Amino acid sequence: MISVIEKTKTCRAVYFDGFNKITQITNQIQDTKDLFAWFEIKEIEPFLNGSYKFSDYIVKRTKNPLIYEIIKSKVDIKRRNKDNQLHKILTTEDADILLSLNDDELIFEANDKLKESIEIDANQLVSVAGKTDHVFFITHKDRPEFLIKTVEVPFSELLSTGKHVKLAFNKYSISVYTQKYFDKYSWRKV
Image 1 (tube, rainbow, N blue to C red):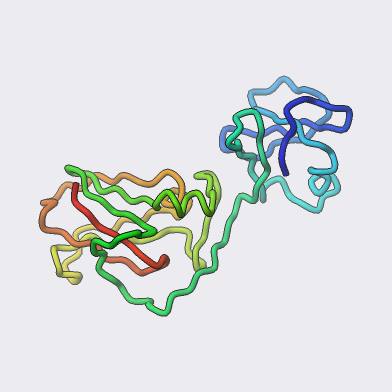
Image 2: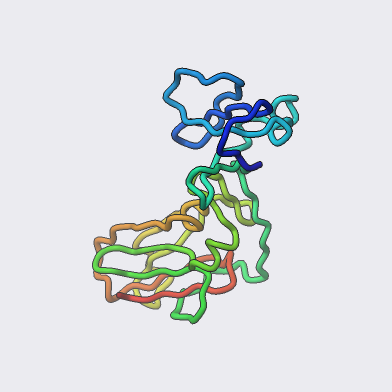
Protein backbone atom coordinates (compact mmCIF):
# COMPACT_ATOMS: atom_id res chain seq x y z
CA MET A 1 0.00 0.00 0.00
CA ILE A 2 1.65 3.20 -1.22
CA SER A 3 0.65 6.73 -0.20
CA VAL A 4 -0.05 9.64 -2.53
CA ILE A 5 1.60 13.05 -2.28
CA GLU A 6 -1.47 15.20 -2.91
CA LYS A 7 -4.84 14.76 -1.22
CA THR A 8 -7.71 13.76 -3.52
CA LYS A 9 -11.44 13.29 -2.90
CA THR A 10 -10.89 9.54 -2.60
CA CYS A 11 -8.11 9.75 0.02
CA ARG A 12 -7.98 9.15 3.75
CA ALA A 13 -5.33 10.27 6.24
CA VAL A 14 -3.54 7.36 7.89
CA TYR A 15 -2.05 8.57 11.19
CA PHE A 16 0.93 6.82 12.77
CA ASP A 17 2.95 7.33 15.94
CA GLY A 18 6.71 7.56 16.61
CA PHE A 19 6.98 3.77 16.40
CA ASN A 20 5.32 3.85 12.94
CA LYS A 21 2.22 2.08 14.31
CA ILE A 22 -1.09 3.10 12.75
CA THR A 23 -3.22 5.02 15.25
CA GLN A 24 -6.23 6.08 13.15
CA ILE A 25 -7.65 6.53 9.67
CA THR A 26 -9.83 9.55 8.98
CA ASN A 27 -11.00 11.86 6.22
CA GLN A 28 -10.22 14.98 8.28
CA ILE A 29 -6.95 16.40 9.52
CA GLN A 30 -6.74 15.85 13.27
CA ASP A 31 -4.95 17.98 15.88
CA THR A 32 -2.48 15.37 17.10
CA LYS A 33 1.27 14.83 17.54
CA ASP A 34 1.13 11.83 15.20
CA LEU A 35 2.28 12.04 11.60
CA PHE A 36 0.01 11.12 8.72
CA ALA A 37 0.12 10.22 5.03
CA TRP A 38 -2.63 10.26 2.38
CA PHE A 39 -3.73 6.89 1.01
CA GLU A 40 -6.38 6.11 -1.59
CA ILE A 41 -9.45 4.44 -0.04
CA LYS A 42 -9.12 1.41 -2.34
CA GLU A 43 -5.54 0.87 -1.03
CA ILE A 44 -6.55 0.90 2.64
CA GLU A 45 -10.00 -0.67 2.30
CA PRO A 46 -9.00 -3.82 4.25
CA PHE A 47 -8.45 -1.59 7.31
CA LEU A 48 -11.76 0.18 6.81
CA ASN A 49 -13.81 -3.01 6.48
CA GLY A 50 -12.02 -4.76 9.37
CA SER A 51 -10.10 -7.37 7.33
CA TYR A 52 -6.75 -5.98 8.53
CA LYS A 53 -5.90 -4.92 12.08
CA PHE A 54 -3.92 -1.70 12.71
CA SER A 55 -1.62 -3.59 15.10
CA ASP A 56 -0.43 -5.94 12.33
CA TYR A 57 0.99 -3.13 10.16
CA ILE A 58 3.33 -0.14 10.31
CA VAL A 59 3.83 2.89 8.08
CA LYS A 60 7.32 3.16 6.57
CA ARG A 61 8.94 5.95 4.56
CA THR A 62 10.02 4.89 1.05
CA LYS A 63 13.13 6.03 -0.80
CA ASN A 64 11.11 9.08 -1.82
CA PRO A 65 10.80 11.06 1.46
CA LEU A 66 7.30 12.27 0.51
CA ILE A 67 5.84 8.82 -0.05
CA TYR A 68 5.03 6.21 2.61
CA GLU A 69 4.00 2.59 2.45
CA ILE A 70 2.08 0.33 4.81
CA ILE A 71 3.86 -2.96 5.53
CA LYS A 72 3.32 -5.86 7.92
CA SER A 73 4.77 -5.22 11.36
CA LYS A 74 5.73 -8.86 11.85
CA VAL A 75 7.87 -10.67 9.31
CA ASP A 76 8.50 -14.41 9.61
CA ILE A 77 11.43 -15.60 7.51
CA LYS A 78 11.25 -19.35 7.31
CA ARG A 79 14.81 -20.52 6.78
CA ARG A 80 16.04 -23.89 7.78
CA ASN A 81 19.57 -25.09 8.04
CA LYS A 82 20.67 -28.68 8.46
CA ASP A 83 23.37 -27.51 10.86
CA ASN A 84 21.75 -26.78 14.22
CA GLN A 85 24.97 -26.88 16.19
CA LEU A 86 27.16 -23.99 17.24
CA HIS A 87 29.66 -22.85 14.66
CA LYS A 88 32.75 -20.74 15.10
CA ILE A 89 32.57 -17.59 12.98
CA LEU A 90 35.64 -17.27 10.77
CA THR A 91 36.71 -14.73 8.15
CA THR A 92 34.74 -15.46 4.98
CA GLU A 93 34.24 -13.64 1.68
CA ASP A 94 30.78 -12.39 0.63
CA ALA A 95 29.15 -13.19 4.00
CA ASP A 96 25.51 -12.41 4.85
CA ILE A 97 26.21 -11.49 8.49
CA LEU A 98 29.30 -9.47 9.41
CA LEU A 99 30.87 -9.29 12.86
CA SER A 100 33.72 -6.96 13.57
CA LEU A 101 35.68 -5.83 16.59
CA ASN A 102 36.66 -2.17 16.67
CA ASP A 103 38.56 -1.19 19.82
CA ASP A 104 36.26 -2.35 22.65
CA GLU A 105 33.09 -2.60 20.57
CA LEU A 106 31.61 -5.63 18.81
CA ILE A 107 29.56 -4.75 15.72
CA PHE A 108 26.88 -7.11 14.41
CA GLU A 109 25.32 -6.27 11.02
CA ALA A 110 23.99 -7.71 7.76
CA ASN A 111 25.75 -6.97 4.48
CA ASP A 112 24.24 -4.24 2.29
CA LYS A 113 23.09 -6.70 -0.38
CA LEU A 114 21.05 -8.69 2.14
CA LYS A 115 19.57 -5.51 3.69
CA GLU A 116 18.46 -4.23 0.28
CA SER A 117 16.96 -7.56 -0.78
CA ILE A 118 14.70 -7.96 2.28
CA GLU A 119 14.08 -4.27 3.18
CA ILE A 120 13.47 -4.73 6.90
CA ASP A 121 12.58 -1.72 9.05
CA ALA A 122 13.96 -1.62 12.61
CA ASN A 123 10.39 -1.24 13.95
CA GLN A 124 9.20 -4.52 12.44
CA LEU A 125 9.14 -7.71 14.47
CA VAL A 126 11.20 -10.20 12.47
CA SER A 127 11.43 -13.90 13.22
CA VAL A 128 13.74 -16.33 11.49
CA ALA A 129 12.99 -20.02 11.93
CA GLY A 130 10.61 -19.08 14.75
CA LYS A 131 13.16 -16.97 16.69
CA THR A 132 13.11 -13.18 17.05
CA ASP A 133 16.71 -12.85 18.33
CA HIS A 134 20.01 -14.08 16.94
CA VAL A 135 22.26 -15.30 19.77
CA PHE A 136 26.05 -14.99 19.63
CA PHE A 137 28.44 -16.54 22.16
CA ILE A 138 31.67 -14.71 22.95
CA THR A 139 34.26 -17.18 24.29
CA HIS A 140 37.96 -17.43 25.00
CA LYS A 141 39.82 -17.93 21.73
CA ASP A 142 39.05 -21.38 20.28
CA ARG A 143 37.39 -22.52 23.54
CA PRO A 144 33.61 -22.66 23.11
CA GLU A 145 33.22 -24.17 26.58
CA PHE A 146 34.72 -21.01 28.22
CA LEU A 147 31.88 -18.50 27.80
CA ILE A 148 32.63 -14.81 28.40
CA LYS A 149 29.40 -13.19 27.25
CA THR A 150 26.15 -13.98 25.43
CA VAL A 151 24.83 -11.32 23.05
CA GLU A 152 21.24 -11.42 21.77
CA VAL A 153 20.62 -9.29 18.67
CA PRO A 154 17.01 -8.85 17.48
CA PHE A 155 16.73 -9.91 13.83
CA SER A 156 14.96 -6.62 13.03
CA GLU A 157 17.99 -4.71 14.30
CA LEU A 158 20.55 -7.08 12.76
CA LEU A 159 18.91 -6.88 9.32
CA SER A 160 18.42 -3.08 9.34
CA THR A 161 20.63 -0.85 11.50
CA GLY A 162 23.03 -3.33 13.07
CA LYS A 163 23.99 -3.52 16.75
CA HIS A 164 27.03 -2.24 18.65
CA VAL A 165 27.97 -3.90 21.95
CA LYS A 166 30.72 -2.77 24.35
CA LEU A 167 33.13 -5.55 25.29
CA ALA A 168 35.16 -5.12 28.47
CA PHE A 169 37.58 -7.98 27.87
CA ASN A 170 40.88 -8.68 26.13
CA LYS A 171 39.78 -8.28 22.53
CA TYR A 172 42.69 -10.28 21.10
CA SER A 173 41.81 -13.54 22.76
CA ILE A 174 38.16 -14.14 21.88
CA SER A 175 36.17 -16.22 19.43
CA VAL A 176 32.51 -15.91 18.46
CA TYR A 177 30.17 -18.89 18.05
CA THR A 178 26.56 -19.01 16.89
CA GLN A 179 23.82 -21.20 15.54
CA LYS A 180 23.64 -20.62 11.77
CA TYR A 181 20.48 -18.95 10.47
CA PHE A 182 22.15 -17.56 7.34
CA ASP A 183 24.50 -19.17 4.84
CA LYS A 184 27.70 -17.25 5.53
CA TYR A 185 29.10 -15.34 8.52
CA SER A 186 32.35 -13.42 8.68
CA TRP A 187 34.51 -12.18 11.56
CA ARG A 188 37.23 -9.56 11.49
CA LYS A 189 39.16 -7.38 13.91
CA VAL A 190 39.52 -3.74 12.83
